[in-house]
Structures are given as structure tokens and as C-alpha cells.
Length: 402
Image (cartoon, rainbow, N blue to C red; front, side):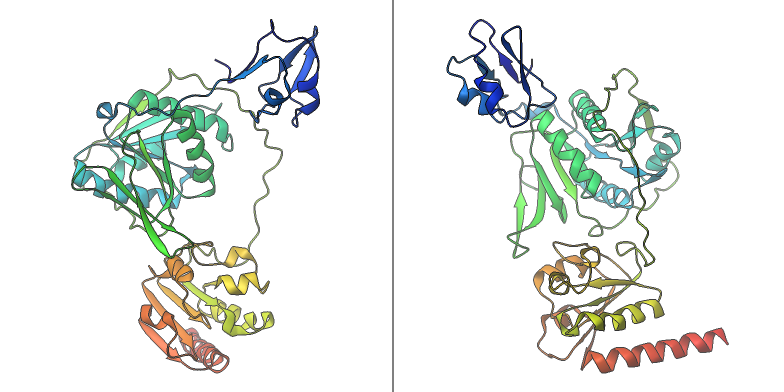
């Protein structure tokens, strides 16, 4: 059933609805209003303008569901350029922990063209069933098509939990899916556990600018859906030999035509190390005092073959692009070594880097909160400390080369 309808018997062809429609979605044909569903956003302007009650919007009710028929843990297997997204191994790791409490199988939805090798890889990491649609008709950037196919599979298979990555793609597809199947979605989770009393999925995420951690439950709708923030959960390891998974092809589901036309894909050229995947990160904050002083951070990063990060204060001041921001509203990172230079350690910044293996803080304020989270702290002027670090590190590098 279409979400909006013109009752032709009541329509008198007055054209009031045509005049008020902000999306040019209504035209008159044979003196009757006709609505283009592709353009209509259900804003309701036409209903308010119509004096004859000739237009009706049908809204689906968000009723409590029968949840006992749902079981299992499922994940959306995002991939790019023939490789699984790095966050997927983290989601599988989280799913395997949930499996220990629920004793239910892990499945993965895999969509695309030439997916057999990725399906086998998912099984190697502990996925019990891969629900796959392998077809050249599924475009890599056709998020509308993929959302429709994911929804169809979820309706058919009825998993109790459905997880995806808090990536650009995950944040685009999963909300569409949640809206289609009428369930809730908790975005950007940093922790997933099973409530011991009611066996519900406890979905924990930062709220109110990172000042509190909110735990959310979805009691009356299924599946319980969540996206997982990158670099906050441990990656799954390959399972021991003996684990057998199954690849199930969903060829019976019709693939819809995409409404998205990809004109061109321009790969971002970045001469620096990718911040999220970097093993070593050097970040600068307000203590740098001037944007030109970021050359110190960049040189130290180059010396250790690392990436350049920044606090929100430095980004907001226009000293460095947003792509370098680490924190709650930036990127979450988990390097081997994180060096914070002139960063006080606001909770929003800590939320993005506190999972680093080793944190080294350089700050002239001995009471800076960053020191409470650091394995190593240097109390001093960064304009003296950083150049000395660069000198010492280059000396070590030079002696090795000799």
C-alpha cells in the first residue's frame, strides 16, 4: 500500500496542493491530483492545503511485537574493494562474547558480487551461517538496494540481535533497515553485554557530549539493533580447526533497482598514515598555541612513521582539518603508542583514545587530567620536549641505518 493516496472522488482539481508542495511532487492529470511517490517526503503540506479531505497519509503503527519467535545473533558484513571492513572483526569478537551468554548461533548478512571468498573468511572467524546474496546487480554504493535486501533477510530469518559497524556505510544502511522493519537502533555503541536478568542486549553508548554513558534496552521489538564504534572492541581471532560454518544463498529474494546513480568515485589522496589504522599517533592540542606549531607534531609523527591527530580545540580553532580529530565527535583510535602533546585530557578526547596500548602525555600542567590515563607522563614545555624527542629518535634511527 502506498504511504499517501489521493481520493479521486473527493478531488476537484483546485490545484491548491500543487502550489504548496515544496518538492514538486504533485501534478494535475485529467483534473485530478497525482502524487509522485519518488519525490514525496510525506511532509503533509498538501493535506493541510486541501479543503476537501482528498489526500490521506497512511502511517504504520509501531506496535509491540511478538519477540519470543526471534533467536540468534546476526551482523552486517560490510566490505570494500574485496576486503571485509576492519570493524567487522571487532563485531564478530563482540558477537562471540554474546554467544557465550545466549548460546545462540552467529550469522552474517553478506551482499555483493563475487562474495565466496569473503563468506569463507567469515566462517574462519567463527560465523556459523553466512546469509549471502551474490549478484552483479548489487552495486557497491547502492545503499537503498542493500537496505531493502537486509530488511527482507531479517524478516525471513528473525535474528534476535543485529549488529553493524558505526561506519559511514553502517550509519547509512542500518537506520534505513530499522525503519523498514519497525525496530529500534542504538548508534555508536562502545559496549555490548547481555543483561543477566532478562537476557536483553545492553547497548552502552556515550551521551550528553560524552559526560555520561547511557545503557539502552529494546524490550518490545526485534531484532535488537546496534552499530558498534570502531576501535573500541577486541578483534576476533580465527577459530580453531573443527568449526564448521554454512553458507546459505538467498537467491529467491528479488533484487530491486537502485535509485542511486554513482557518477564518479574519487579516492581521497592522503600522504599521511590513516589515523584509524595507525600503530603510532602523535596528537596536538591547545597547548601548541599557534597552527604553525603543528609542524612539530608532523615531524615527530614522520620520525616514528605515525599519523597526526588533534584535539577538538585545535580543530575548532582552524589549526588542522577535522579529519585529524580524535575524540567523541572525531575518530576513535587504538594505536600501540599515542603521544598527546599539549592536550589537557577532556573526557570527550579521552573517549577517542583511552584504549591505546601505551599513552604518553606531554604537558606543562602537572594536574592535567591526561596524566591520569597515561602510562608515561612528561611534565614540561612541549616546545622543548618534542624537539628533543625528535632529535633522540632520529639518532636511534640513524644508528640503526648505519
